[in-house]
Length: 219
Length: 210
Image (cartoon, rainbow over all chains, first blue to last red; front, side):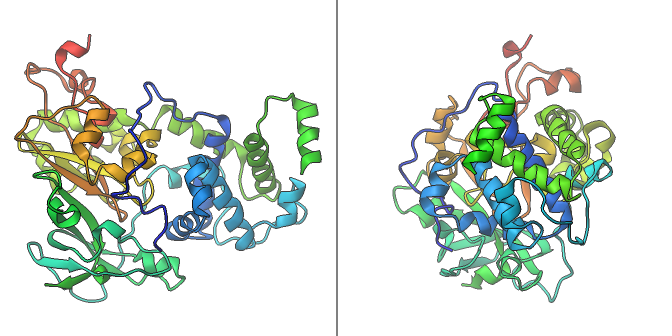
């Protein structure tokens, strides 16, 4: 979707302001939200793509004005209700009102910690040979789906070069739409800045995205 | 809702914010229903506050600076290379990719769409990495972004920005500073900052550390 989350190339957000000696969490609740997100992830009640899409669908004014972990919290709470893990009246009551339903995995306990501190694999079996090889010139498609996609707006409809091939991965656009893993070849595609930003682009700058095969066409 | 807030405030003082209360309520529901063990959440927070951070990446980079074969293995397949020293650095998962800075090319990492970050080796991302300013600007005007960090590159160094739009995760191998010949990996690791592994900084010079 063409949402405010897709920020590459936008102007007006001001300077980047690094915070010296920044704490990992600024408030206790932020750590709880992060930890709950990780724990919920183990349930497999939804995928990472579903959770990204949920944040993208938040109202633009909310997305732009609320703290990072508040968005995570709202996402978690809404998806937990939507997937039937908890109920809205329980949120209103602030306590459990009925027994848990069976989850695919869970409950999350100390024994599961290792599952959340190391990234899992998104490799999936290839469904066919790769269409492109390293060095190929490609054009990203000019697509504007209303649903989740990982092809950023600034990199649509542009000429680039395939620089790396990463094997086949679960395809976020399909996963977030509830259509399963739909494995696709994944490439690093590199663009000259002039191709993306025009004649005034910073000289020598090159930008790459990770592009799933359905985003690309032969030149 | 308001009544519940009032109750909490009455019981526990008025310093709890609305977010404290809402987050606590959700945690209570999940714990009462048996989905999560609060002690497991405590442990996750503790791990990210004390165990999983940029010191992991710094150990990896220091080893790469000292061991050419390891550096090549790291550039070929970072997940695999780091797994060979995982006993020392902690557990690192799939799809990690290391990119090397050279006098000709300076690498920078971003996620313009959300906040993808090499958490296994750098810990949780700092606020600036997740900021709208960084996410919007670095793919278009990275020199100006570097200036916000007080970094100026030589005129003949070109910038390469890697937008983490899939599940691959990037870490920058910064250039080893001059004057560090013969240093141990532990000494070198002190020069390797988080920002130098994201590309918004350079490794420190020997004069900047004790």
